[in-house]
Image (cartoon, rainbow, N blue to C red):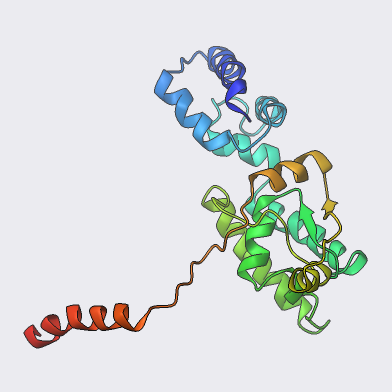
Length: 218
């Protein structure tokens, strides 16, 4: 959701609370917003509707986790769905192309596992283990509420080679829902998720000098 959706989001929560004989405070609505703002307003509304229609839990006022479960199922459901997209993309498109998925967590997980090109080097024997690692990492991100930072694209072999030679590359292939994939592209980063910096000899000497008194005291 965008900030412009906040008023409609608040009205939706207040109407839901009223249905259950509850009231929502301003702080409470802000907490709900912080948790659910990564989803579309339409998806949140649908999640609330599904909760209210559930014979198992619909009699209770929902919590944000209930809405998330109704939107995307459990973390295991989400991980399996995400892996099916990655598996299909590797097999049908390949890692030669640069791609953008409709799920930012996929980007974060793939980079944690070595990158898009690295997936293409795995053998069929390794593939089940790759799937399990992906699913576990994906569930970890989902449990933490998503990926705070992720690469805007997953760079393929062609773009990597073209960059080295100063040649322009083709636009990335969007995988999944095109609208959400474009949002992932806009919200991503081109910077490294882990910074690298080479120390100069002078800086190295200063670091060692600062550490020397502590070693002597020990």
